[in-house]
Image (cartoon, one colour):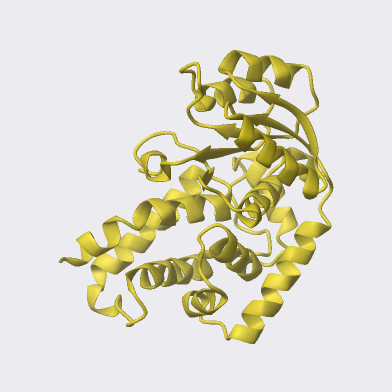
Length: 264
């Protein structure tokens, strides 16, 4: 098996991680593209003996670590306001802490594996993770619109949202109902299934919602790899079915870092 074949199956999930970390499909995919360029330039340096997936994320971490600047200088003035807002929050939640949180909660790595990826000893990983979770616990609550046509899943999401201290603005089951519900509520976040029962699309519903207000959206699907190709306009925040509570929690909290209100 070639190195390219080894890596290919892991790329959709690396894109998911990169997009969640940056809050942008474009920026996240650019980091992934740069990572692949570095791997192609020096393939003999890729393998470490810890497994292809860990090696891939480790190489990504090196690119992110070398490119990240937390002093606010040198940024594009045309950068999306959601991204600018997120930069202001990074003084409260360090880049490394954010990575470890997403690696464990969103990507399913163990604490030990997160340490291997980031080059951090386990006690430090555990401390950073605890600090990151503590920061999430202190975030202000928001109102969440759930777009989900399966009643049991909708109920589960509703309970998770409430347990996290947020409010449920409403539950919609179709594209049309979702847009109408959003217009009638103060929702600051959308949780949306991809495929709805009447054949309508959660993605289309969110696109219409974003035309009304620039709220963050998290998509939920049983087939994440289909929406993480890097070849078209795709979701920034994506979680897989079946999902875990801590995955939803991390995705919600991470997406809220990129809301315009945080710029105030």
